[in-house]
Amino acid sequence: MNIIGRVTADAQVRNVSNSKTVVNFSVAINDSYKNKAGERIEQTTFLDCAYWLSPKVVQILTKGTLVELTGRVSARAWTGSDGQPHAGLNFNTSQIKLHGGARKAETAQAQTKTENIEVNSHENVSPKDDLPF
Image: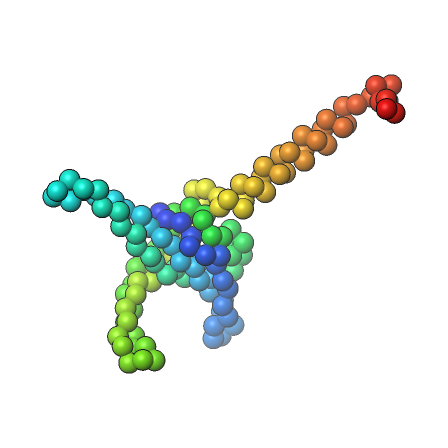
């Protein structure tokens, strides 16, 4: 199954038994449809995701990043400390594909491009054109 959504918070690495690590993150999937009255209904579904293959992906799974995930969905149910029943969806991710960066990544790229332009413009100045005033 493939899903496309935005990461809702920076991913976290957890150590589990037998020295295995898992990367946990959450994804928001937006959907819209028209009801019988013709009104557009917006719906957001949140999935808790787990990625077991490499902890290095934690660097790219930052809040706001648009990702396409391949994996399988599983449902979970538990009883909370207050005795109330709870349920949730888990997505066990086997493949991650980036479709866009978070704003932090875009800002970093823009700053890097600006620094490169400034460096290149200073390199092209010849000594005879350099005026002290």
